[in-house]
Length: 249
Length: 300
Ligand SMILES: Nc1ncnc2c1ncn2[C@@H]1O[C@H](COP(=O)(O)OP(=O)(O)OP(=O)(O)O)[C@@H](O)[C@H]1O
Ligand SMILES: [Mg+2]
Image (cartoon, chains in turn blue, purple):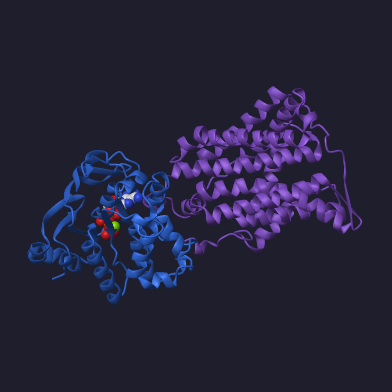
């Protein structure tokens, strides 16, 4: 579904990604682990088009997306929950979700012939609201509150929900457990599993290597802008090298 | 006397607010002080004179003055929006990733260019806006309110309310707020940043065009440098209200108009233009981020 082929990304003169090749298949949860500064966030930002690779190609369901602007990549079906959640602080919870549906609301407006009933209610956006409110009921309660006033855990739920509003085929998640209490982390991981069960492919970046590898079918280990290892989640969990470097064992 | 000054102040304040909105919206999104914005206001006034003269020549003004005026407003707004849109594309967009000083210098360049362009094509002397509305008005608890004043106050209020609705209720309005808060995240949800920036320049320029044309009608005189002082005043109003804040610009504009009008009447009109800045200094002293500005801590 998604293929990165020898991707090189720079920040000015600094080469942050030194030839990343990786692959995510339809329906998988793939995780990307690595130390601080390894290039995990840079990889996701390059996929979603915020950063442009200097060399290499990115293809998504058969199309080359490496030259596309971010908004077109969202329209292709890739949604990105960035590191630090980046909730719009002075938009309400509901408005944050509406912005998540920005690309879809245009699709609905410009291609009218689908009768509303066929999409369940007043178009797809409405039913997507119901879906995320069902997954995280607290967001419904907080609907009218400003995004900036939510707690860290609520913000993460909102960030994931916002990303789901565009009905993505592929979800990029950057450290969703960062700074959250263990009980919230398990809520979030449970939600990730559910989202995947509904057919959304997931590329997950995590510091929390143990939980991430447990959740994922396959994993990649990133070090210094390069892929150091990859394999089945379970195999990586048992590998001596990963244990020593990332699991603190 | 009090009511009279109140009306005069509101008239002036409405105009300042309309111009201030353009400054604040562009600043909110690009963190750029668009020095050329005052010139858009000046162009609005000139275009008004040009179009009205044309309609008078072809006999439309004599046939129906309201129709001629409406068309004049519409055309000035369209032309000024086109100017605003083009200025952004030519002078600011190529510098979007340049150091912050570069687009600022570019803005000053555009401002100087437009002033000289109008001076060369329209002449350096004052132009007269035809006095079509005489000085008719109504008596109102001892004050004289002209129809032009009523029109300016009403039009400013309607435009500000509409802008508020647009920003809070529509898809594009919400996208503008999202872009102002976090451009990267706005791209990640699928907002085309370039479209939003263009829309911001178009809307700001349209408001400035209306302000320019209304002032031309109000004072009856226009020259190529009116954008300079009006621009500085409106910018002051935007800073007063908290630059980047839309309600702030509205409030700041009206406040500035009232302060000018009352201080000119009750203190002295000799320093009329200085009061704006005295108020600015006082407010920034008490609240550095402006009346409606977000303080630094909030801006995570
Ligand atoms: N905006 C930037 N400008 C310059 N260098 C950057 C920038 N962002 C990241 N880098 C550098 O690129 C490299 C990769 O950073 P990246 O943020 O992708 O790491 P990461 O694996 O996500 O780390 P973390 O676990 O801390 O989030 C690091 O060396 C970092 O210093
Ligand atoms: Mg990171």
